[in-house]
Image 1 (cartoon, rainbow, N blue to C red):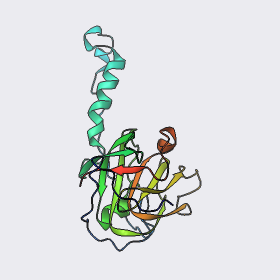
Image 2 (cartoon, one colour):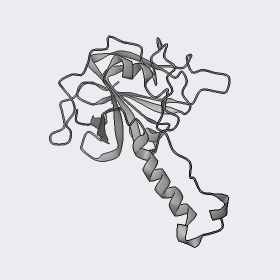
Image 3 (tube, helix red, strand yellow):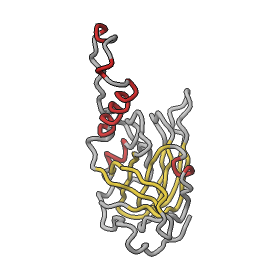
Image 4 (tube, rainbow, N blue to C red):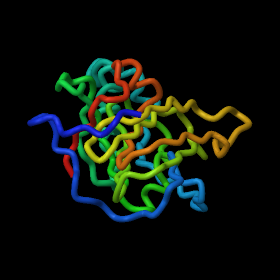
Length: 209
């Protein structure tokens, strides 16, 4: 766990005034005490092409291009009911290592749900948990359909710990997978996202709120 550091000048706008108080020390991709099974996700409407149009074709363009366009259109539907912020990760010297658009979980309800009702997380998306103060936290993985990295950071945004939490197995619900840490902020991103970018303890989360 890295000791608290003074902020890196001009490199971050980390929240120092606080969000809603949760009083919850056991958090998760959703909270251990969650009774909710809400699985609301962004809808993606199927293409309505008739079989009679299947052979017409060149006017509809390249299928791969259509798929790319469809993916682009669906991306905003991820966590569309959440406020969002851009979260960048830098070294202590200000070298940028990675960036995601993160849904903000700043209430007990949102932190209880976490990513448990998210079916798929795009590479450039994540979720940032904002707590009232630095504290001991514990995340679990119930109902998670993919693995994640769990990044703990102190009140200055300095990373204090990183867990690589794999997707629960076929006969597991994820409740037994516990990942403790200490901090005020927690960033959840895709599994091994941090390792692929060389992110480690002592690096800095930067975001506005």
